[in-house]
Length: 246
Image 1 (cartoon, one colour):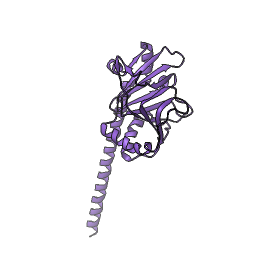
Image 2 (cartoon, one colour):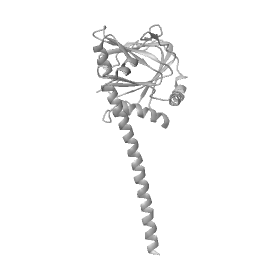
Image 3 (tube, helix red, strand yellow):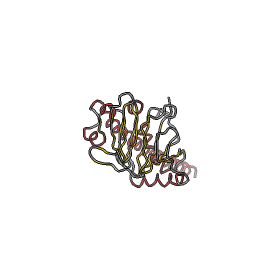
């Protein structure tokens, strides 16, 4: 009888060990997959292909384009249409309680409403986790509240540099509901500029020179042109992750 009990215990331990190893392998496999994705994205940022630049950026001159494309990245279709709907369903109830404002406290935004949100459903946390994994190294302290900015069709964001008192060296934003054109203008040399085509459901990441040396704005429909084509902006929702100021 004792031998039977010992055999059953050994078999149970073997099953537990097998299940643990299987789960560990699956967790490692998923982690490796994320690392590969981030590595690929980093390669795209450090050596952007000519076609990638042509379809996302245009600028005053080649040197300015080079500086901005080395410190700003755009990832098309970063979220799916279903994920966009998931994020909107979670954010929209809060926005419905707010009116659109005609001017911002620093006069940077017109026709907007905004919230800061910390708690998310598991589905939204998974989406935002992908943003954070791509934008921020593990050792970086991130701002836990996500900034959600709802911009009317006729609203626009005026040229500004985000205050270093409130966020650090990296800004990562999802562009939902509408495509738009962002424009960067060098603070000290206004003849240096770059336009960025932000497609619906894309992610942009700004750091370094793009973050600190250039103002950025979302162009109003009157001026929203990329290449020779107008880009009509409808209502636009941006979901922005940031790191802590240094």
